Length: 212
Image (cartoon, rainbow, N blue to C red; front, side, top):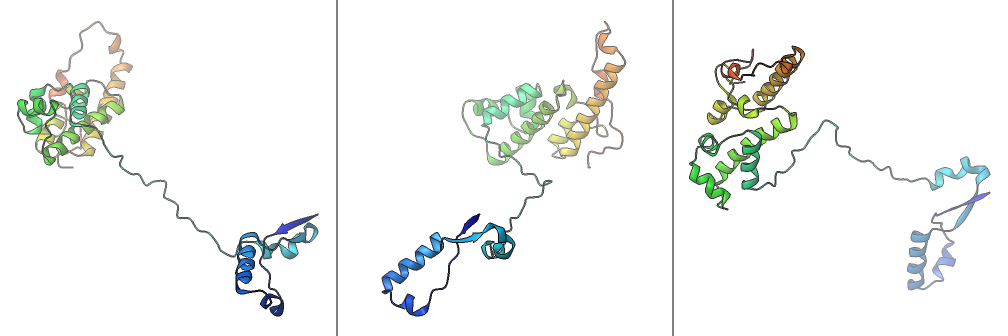
């Protein structure tokens, strides 16, 4: 059994020189593209395999698995406002207060007026907080962001003071999930007593500071 090998070969000088310049170029191109069409016996593969293996090693840079890239957010101003109202249950007046604008400004945004760059960034930050609660599946996010969980300050307070960061959001979601699990294990979900959210006005998450 034999296999074909696409390898260029060296011809006798006088033979090659007998071609015109045009023919020489044609022959060289044919050899480069198509090879020589030489055949090698498969029975002696170990003797000739090195001749047809690639002379160039190919190296590809792999992206580390722990590297992540933030996904671009193409949502409109209206989309962000609706997301905040849906997930955080914020009335327009509270949203306006947290963003440092008037209610009329938000209504103008809903009608198509664009906020300035800095205000739009704050709107997106508030919308991303809403995203975090939505993704986690935590309920009653509107009450949780008012919870005095960070040394007497709520997530809303921290946002207004421009002191919030992702660690506060994650800590609040984690604590909410823990309390929800404890609530269900205690069987309180089956109780006929009307549930209350008063504890959310004063509870504080241990070892978490608003400056962390």
